[in-house]
Length: 147
Image (cartoon, rainbow, N blue to C red; front, side, top):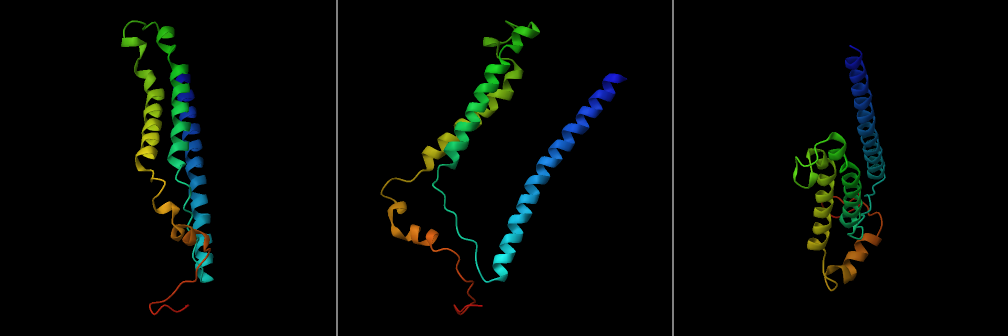
């Protein structure tokens, strides 16, 4: 009976932490929405944040590193459990917690290299820079006049 109670308490704590984590992101999204509404009431539009296109590479490297660390930490579980030799290269199902982030991170790195634009593409033209550096623009109605 004690084991069931401990498991129930740990499950409730985990769910409460997960709900708090999702609630934080929901609250941040709500604040961004309110900011957009305030800008729209003043007749402004949120500036376009183009970024530099390296987000997938950064996240890919971080997630791959995390997966490698998890894989290195979980590898000895096969020896501790006494299942050494039952799985090829002692890579049991517990290794999925590390291998899934490794391959997800590697796919983000591949996406970065497959989708990046060449040096002479649109990034070197002035039109892209003028659009992002222009700042807030007024909202125009159908005839092109300020509303």
